[in-house]
Length: 118
Image (cartoon, one colour):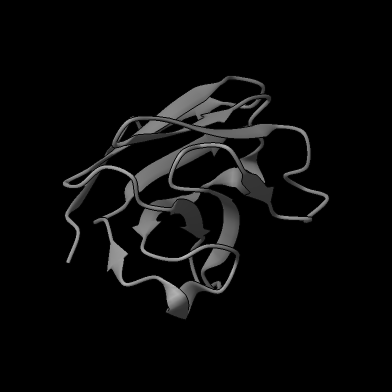
């Protein structure tokens, strides 16, 4: 199983930006970001292929155009711009699959909290 360690979360104000990071214990593996808000189901944010050549984003209107997934070797990033209070959630890094189907991913990080105040 791949070990994933997220960082970069925090408390920010609406309109701010944050960049999350996730270091994987192995390189060249497809990875993704999910998030889970209190009392809500885990939600797909974005995924990226093992070499970064292909990305796939949630079609949720609330996220469109504000989040960018990227990677450098075995580190995954999520740049989040113009953050909104509804982005408040625990953000999870996942590895071992592609696309938006959470059960398909075999490895998960511990999560990093993002809190956006209005």
